[in-house]
Amino acid sequence: MELKQKTDFGLITKSLTNWQGRKEWFFNREHTDTYEQWYEGRYKRAEVWQKKVMAQLLQKDPRVKELLEFGCGTTRFTRWWREIGIEATGGDISPFMLGQAVHLFKGDLVNADSHYMPFKDNTFDAVAFITTFEYYRDPVQVIREAARVGKHGIAFGMMNRNSPKVLRRRVQQLFGKNPFYVTATFYTPALLIQKINEALQGRNYSLEWTCTGLPEWFPVQQWSVPVGDFFGLYVRFSD
Image (cartoon, rainbow, N blue to C red):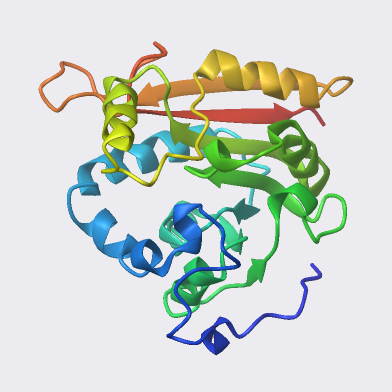
């Protein structure tokens, strides 16, 4: 596997708080420096179920031993893949996120744009996007890049448009209370599948998805109904 030379993300000065004037939250030190704390707090239970869902989907494809996770952020999931027997490489466009990641993750990291992945064809067994695909400006291009770099499949884990929390987040934005989803495009499983089918015309593949992120009091925590805060979807390419 060939990687671009690993960047010393520690070279970013502490006085730099915003990257190139970008408005997205992941280019703002106010948010990236506290990202890990958010996962360790109120989001902890949700993360447990998200990992269960993604493990179920990926472990059904025994060909996947090594993957590239793009939009890896501080490597919450990138660190976890090894626990289910998958080696991971992380990629992210935000030097602030990677500035946190280099202190937490022992594997390879690359600072790059997911629309133009700096890897040769079939470098990895699969490519994964965990709560990052919502921010891509050209999702069809990103899927095509993932299909080029990932030999056997593409894994998606994302916030579900069919969730009451989406409406709440939009209301919060109107009052300037929630900066995290201003540039996000939310998908349902059906909407994501439309993008996948557009991007992968001519390819042979199968799809499987499942939803989680249901209230703690609900009788089930995962189901094959497109309702819930989070859904996982796996595109499996035919040999």
